[in-house]
Length: 50
Image (tube, rainbow, N blue to C red; front, top):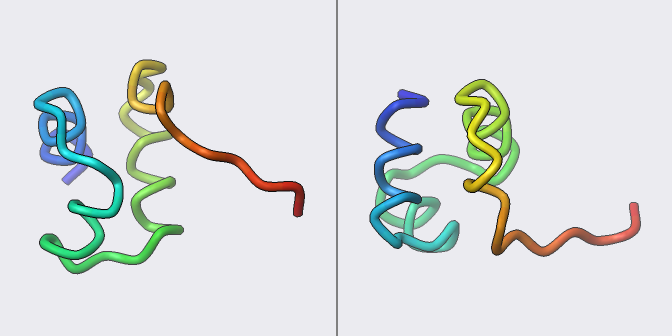
């Protein structure tokens, strides 16, 4: 699944698009991005102060 997420992000799909169309939650998407170890997946991410 991390390969699919990596390919979607690299092809220009937004996090919102992935969440809506693949049907996963934000935590799962973040985890899969981390597992894939591709820094470019985080280039357009917005981080908040938690």
